[in-house]
Length: 68
Length: 350
Image (cartoon, rainbow over all chains, first blue to last red; front, side):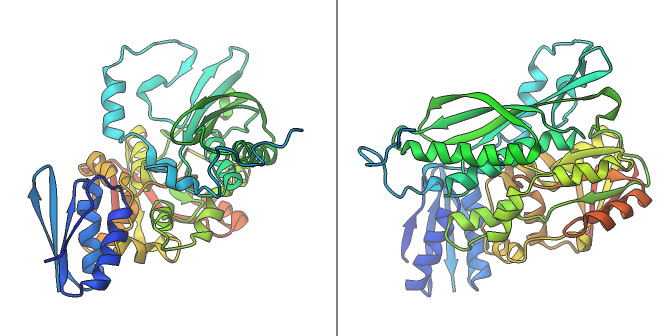
């Protein structure tokens, strides 16, 4: 599964990068975030765009799993 | 006058102001919980000439001059949420001046606070100042000077002073049971500007709304009965309604169907264009606000999101609220009412 690293980025950048990456990865991808707003906003984007999203803790941040 | 930075030597060309900052507008406010923790730990200066002092969460401080008049003082500054420096100056000034209007005052004199990156052309600073001066002029207020420091991120704002009669000052703590709550601008600036930063919307309507002074709202309300007033900025509609309700020992009931949002805001919120302040505001407010079960997540997101240069929130008797709406027109709305204190300070119904 494709993974994009959005650590160190503040909103809306993680959402914008997720949006762009999903265009090339229609089956889904993982987004690594370390910002709390990104942890909330990236799943909101994924779900609004018709994907399923789940969040799990990983290191000092979170992995947002986005699936078709 | 010398042309500044015209040749661009060493300066960034075509810079986007919003790319230089991490957060912007009133979203850059420190989380309310953190701020209250610090203020609560300070030895409070008590001075009989100071109304309210730190313990009241009002928009500005009020200092008794002892001759029937008071000084109303406020300061507000933030990083840019728009790329055009003139517009940023206008918005920062309108936002700072608003704290005076929220106290029922008319701004008299202001000082500017400017943090400016050395990489930017000085013409950018000049445009920010010109924008602020334009708004100050519209407000009948003079910018008498200011202070400028070098900083990596640009920031701008004003410290504003008004002199008013002591008995004409509004506070955010006098709302009475049965009062209507009037809001004078649309909601959703924080969401619109987050999406704007990501290139998702022009946000023309939100930018125009931020530029508008709360002067007209204040002037119309002055002729009517106002029990409590505040302006809606970084702590969100719910945060500012909470402060009013708490200060008034009452409960604010807000009706979702009566609120006016920028048309794109709910959809942008649904797609996760939410400012960080939306989450820190909820941290502080979650045990103070009760939502009806039918209130959708997207509207909770919008109502917790910071506003910048938002409208006045006025608690007025029903007939005065109706007169206000008649004269002010759109986008002012009655958005709810004040009830006797109950379990939650703010209740949001559908």
